[in-house]
Amino acid sequence: MKFSVLISVYDKETPRFFKEALESVVEQTRKPDEIVVVKDGRLTDGLEEVLRTFERENEPLVKIVPLEENVGLGEALRTGIWHCSHPVIARMDSDDISLPHRFETQIDYLKTHVDVDLVGGWISEFDENDSRRHTRTVPTGHETIKRRARYRNPLNHVSVMFRKQAVLKSGNYQTCLWNEDYYLWIRMLSRGCRIENIPEVLLDVRTGKGMYQRRGGRNYIMNEVKFQRIILESGFISRSEFVFNVSSRTFVRVLPNDVRSLIYTRMLRKKPVVPQAAGE
Image 1 (spheres, rainbow, N blue to C red):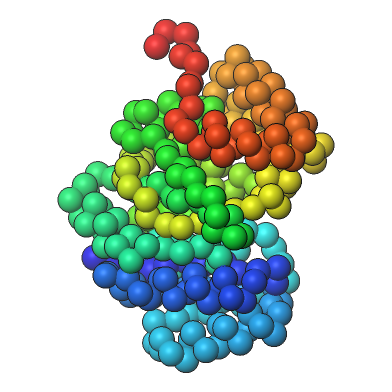
Image 2: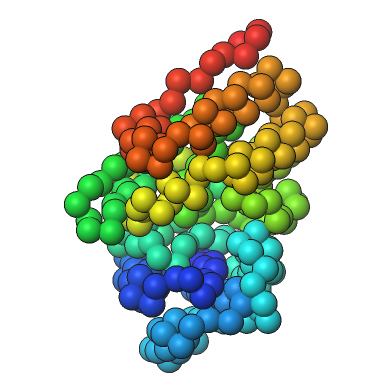
């Protein structure tokens, strides 16, 4: 089963982290058949050098897709999907590290579960000093994932591997600030696609105070309300679920950054308790 790896990179990334991410893609027990890198706008000289070296050392695996200007993650991935040559695609961020067995584990899973359209897994989060690690678990079992999706993103985006046609039939990635992946999962679930998670850590993922800072403030709150309204109008959630989601998220977003960081690492990195909808 041939597969592509899809990566989007933009000018704010750190060259050293980008290099480590790319190296982790090729240092796998099951190597990819193609690596598609979308340059989301003009890159820094350091990032360009990392990419040139990687392309030279890994020809002809690497396909670079340059975009004239920064269009954001959703549109960059949407474009990248069309440039992937193979029927299965693995997502990878430009600063994370795939563990050596990741692709083999997921390809084997898709081979033996032909009804599954997308498979994700757990991630191990670490900070800038690698001094604190937290495992971000996600639910297993399609029905549990579908139920959890009404309240929280049930997947670690950086861990997913999916069948290209299932994503295209669900409308591909779309621009939806900070929710590009979540919105795609909801549309896939609504179309009847089957989604699963492997209860195993597949990647090391960088975090830090900056990540939690970005998850707070008025703009984040307004954007989340807009997103919740979109999925309410699509029929994926009920009005009571809309109220619950907006109120619980708003509470977290207005907290000080250090407190929000504590909630994410101590509470939300554990399996959340989901209120049962009426009739369940």
